[in-house]
Amino acid sequence: NRNMLENKYSQMPAMFDGMKLAAVATVLYIIVRCLNLKSPTAPPDLIYQDTALNRFLLKSCSQLTKEYIPPLLWGKSGHLQTALYGKLGRVSSPHPCGIRKYLPMQDGATATFDLFEPLGDHRTGDDITMVICPGIGNHSEKHYIRTFVDYAQKDGYRCAVLNHLGALPNIELTSPRMFTYGCTWEFASMVGYIKRAYPNTQLIVVGFSLGGNIVCKFLGENRANQERVLCCVSVCQGYSALRAQETFLQWDQFRRFYNFLMADNMKKIILSHRHSLFGGHSLKMIDADLSRLYTATSLMQIDDNIMRKFHGHRSLKEYYEKESCVHYIHNVDVPLLLVNSADDPLVHDSLLTIPRTLAAKKPNVIFALTLHGGHLGFFEGAVLFPQPLTWMDKVIVGYANAICQWEKQKPPCQSDHLSEGSCLKEKA
Image 1: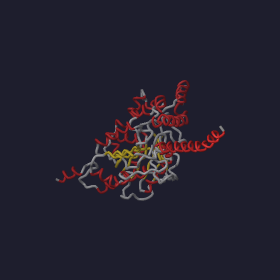
Image 2: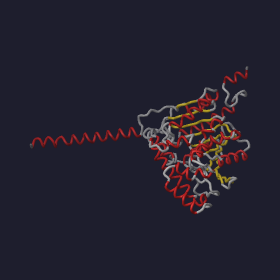
Image 3: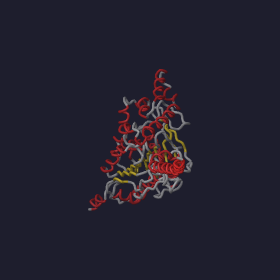
Image 4: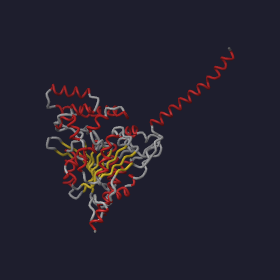
């Protein structure tokens, strides 16, 4: 018995070593799976029609055809890219110096935007202004906006950045209304100001996430809005709120959790303006609205109880249908670059049939889908620490530069969207 006990205890260290090894192997396996380390890197998947303009753009904007390489240890996780884009400040966020403009609206609201002059001449010698619409509840002071503006300024672009109505904590609302998913009034007011103040400038339209929906809807809802617009770039938008509604209630890719976080942020913005938004209502109505707001756990509940009422929509379905760019984007005829990421936890793959179909049908559209990048992340870097500029920043400016160059040197027989075949026919 003594020998048996000695043998048993002598085997225990080996057994514990085996358990430790198994635990380490399990942790490593989870890390590899969660960080998606085995996923390959690749150039963006592109859908476009073979036209002279598109060939020129893809040749001139190398980021669209080269391999996108995220940081090795964490950059292949869409969740980490998404979580870090707003928190890291793009590693070291610059502080571009701008002037805040205030625009009174017809309904009593006051739109604000920040204007940043270029830090040098544009490479074409022309006057070019980027009109920029940020993501949900965002404004010119957000890290990713500041980084992009600084980069664009240095390349010779004037930048005008819309501050979503109610998003800036130090700016009071002057009417019982704040920004919504697809209201284009404030963006249109900013664009109108730029066109009047700079009669010789041409516009590059840029939209991030919710801002992408707004700018595409703005251009498509009235063709006059496309005058003096050279091109439009939309990054990480979802195209249809009605279709996205169901996917936002699913736990796949933790969308339900992101939905809760965004709803919580919207609550804070609404509550910070409660006196402006609800001051004219009866106390009973205010209590009912605030009660529904406090108990809301999703954006859809907030949209149904609060947001849709700002514009008198009778139902959530009507609100989402009328404010989504999917019903207007086919009217956009200027060159249009639509960018999404396959691992974006907020935008379900089913929504990407919209840009895929559009790019296959319209010669002015390029749809670029990256394997990695998350939601507005697109960090680049070696192993751990990302570069200050992201792939997204470089793509937008690179595409804009290519468009400006095309406009400067295109043959007289070519309009913006004519193919080489059309040009040859005109010559004949």
